[in-house]
Amino acid sequence: MAIGIGFDIHRLVPGRKLVLGGVEIDHPVGLLGHSDGDAVLHALVDAMLGASGRGDIGDRFPDDDPVWKGADSRELLRRVASEVAETWEVGNADITILAEEPKMAPHRSAMRACIAEILKIPESRVSVKAKTSEGLGAIGAREAIASFAAVQLEPK
Ligand code: MG
Image (cartoon, rainbow, N blue to C red):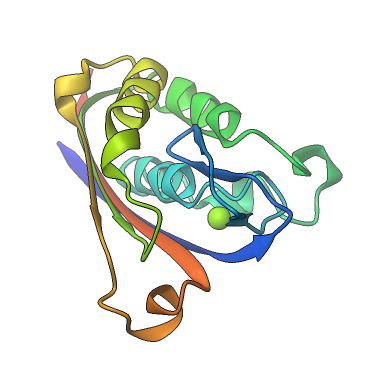
């Protein structure tokens, strides 16, 4: 089997939708990015690419390429998942979101469902956890949201 990890962080700014784990969350600020800024799916894309030895999200979807401007990150994950699925099966995915606010608990099951559907695995094999940064640093100051992701792949 193979294991991959991914990390991503985006700045919170007014005038942007907050999209995390493929789910739009009602919040006064959103994540700045060339795409929709979904730090959770970006971390997961990097974990998938890492586990399968396929480079990183910056190689695949350059942030100076107009094709990916405003991109729905579910589409980025879908593309990577379908490529990885040629030779690997996803065992499980485990995600930790670092955000001072909003509360992630009400959105966790929608995120799990979205990710499970894209990875074509049961929701029971997708974990979404969340924690604050205890008021410390940029995340604690509500200036950013970050995410870690780990995936395990098994050869087909
Ligand atoms: Mg990103």
